[in-house]
Image 1 (tube, rainbow, N blue to C red):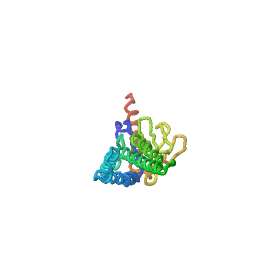
Image 2: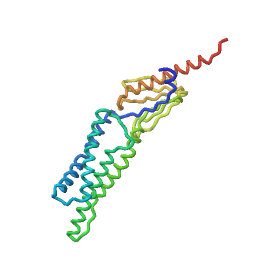
Image 3: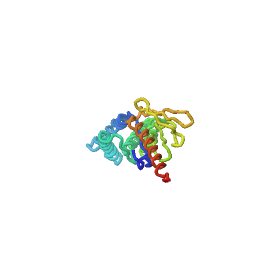
Image 4: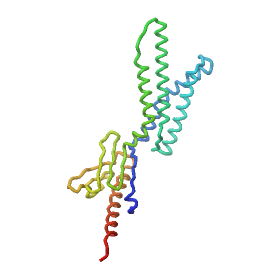
Length: 235
C-alpha cells in the first residue's frame, strides 16, 4: 500500500455472514399474504365478487409484491450485498399488511352489525402496527445496515461490528501495533501496554476486512516514515 492509499479515507459497510440467507427469508415471509390478496382480487375480476376500488388496489399491491420479490431474489443472487435508499419490497409488504388488517377489521365490523353487537379485535391493529414498522424499515433499512462498518482514515480507524454493538475508535497515536490472530481476528496493541482483540469472524469476508485493516496500518507507518525521511534536510 502506498502513501496515497494510506492517506485516503475509506468507510466500508460490513455484512453478517448470514445476511443473504436472512434477506431471502425476509423477502419470502410475505408471499402468502400477497397470494391471498391476488386470489381475492382475481375472484372479483372473474365476477365472483363485486369489483371495487379496494379489490383493484389489492391486485396491484399483490402483483407489485411478487414482481419486487422476483427482483429482490435476482439482486441477491447477482449482488448479495446491494443497498438501495428505499427498500421497495418492505414498502410493498407494508401495503399488504395494511390491506390485510383492513380486511380483518371490515369482516369483524360486518359480523358485529349482523349480530347487533360491538366487539373489539386486536389482530387488525396488530397488522396496522406491523405495516407501520415495515414502512419505517423501507426508508431506514439502508441506514440501519450501514451502522455495521469499518472506517479507515488519516487520524486512525473506527467501526462497529454489530448493528447494536458498541463502536470502537482508535487514533494512530495510541496504537503501537496491529497483530493478526486466528482466521479473522486482530489484536490492537496500545502504546500504554494494554491490548484489545477485535474479531471479524462473524462477518462476510471477515478475514479480508481484518487483513485490510492490518495492511492499512502498515501502509500508514511506511508513509509516515517516508514523509519523515523526505523532510530531513541534507547537511
